Image 1: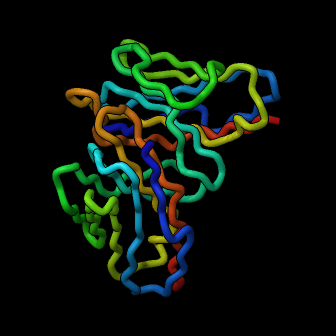
Image 2 (image 1 turned 135 degrees about the vertical axis):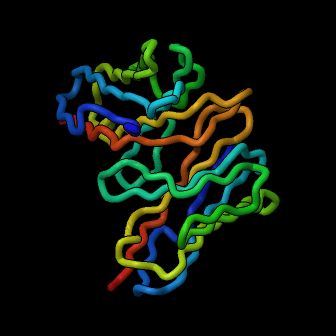
Length: 112
Length: 116
């Protein structure tokens, strides 16, 4: 059974810091992995999608990596800004299923 | 290009009542999935619809049912509401993948359901 864990659960950093959010999973037979941002009470905004055959994806200040052998994905945020404050969720689809399994998220607060 | 839309935005119901939530997928998408997100938790998969059929279901009771229409929009119905059904209900759309898999999902803003 696939399980997804995100550490840390919460993180508070000063503006300008580079930071790394972690996502661990137990079954390496994944089809793809997606990182989302969620503002309080809102829906999910897709940040990056990594296909099973890829090692990383980049968009602006965001970089996501995938290491299936170790069961880990990381989301790197460069030069953090107060506007980055949100909950970040990773979700993955295991091969042979139609559903995403989500982690519980990392609540990020970037202090001005 | 309209993204995924959901209605209503908020809903307050009483225990035992029934509720219907609606979702229109992103233009060009043919698959709709529904998720339940309790406060402080990650979304939990309810079910997915493709070609007007439910093709996978998560660990939710039969009180949760759905429908997909020929224009790919979808409804989520919950009967005999319980206090524990209070949550944010998210709809996600995607383009069907070849084989048993799921492509990139795009989420709507959600419907906040409160059961009193």
